[in-house]
Length: 239
Image (cartoon, rainbow, N blue to C red):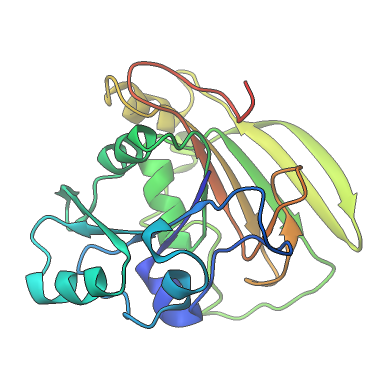
């Protein structure tokens, strides 16, 4: 129903976040940007690659009005959101998306974006594509950014499933929730509001068409899928 990325990804990669099928598309997912400072370039491809009103720019409620006006002039939809520690309040954002009938959200990583969703307790499932390539590098991008966690507070996954996808391996697992999961207490403190999420990260490249939804739609880049809405859990799309 929607795909999202952080402003760092938008500025660095200028992704389209569109469906990789010939038009007319069976549906057009929303394209969501987490952009507290309203820094999304008005010429960004995610605005103009498809219907501009389906580009949702989530900005802080204190973002500069002149920047907001420039984004609105492109036809994009600007969502004014509360913030926590200078970041978009993800619970509030997902509730806003739920009100727009979004039940499944693919989140583009960015390790910092992944870390923010994990910290908010919104991740329900993780999928990692492993390629037969060794890159290394002291400054290599991490799958999950942020300050990191102690071993006893690690986000625990399982059971695992492994699927060959061409030369790659797709490793999938649910996020385990319980007393041993450091993510559980943060999730429990949220009360009502969005509760479930799913995620994917491709380690060897950021772009390239792939079927993410199992229904023939192809989108670019790694993703994290969030599922949920106010007042209770909503499982993966179709249920």
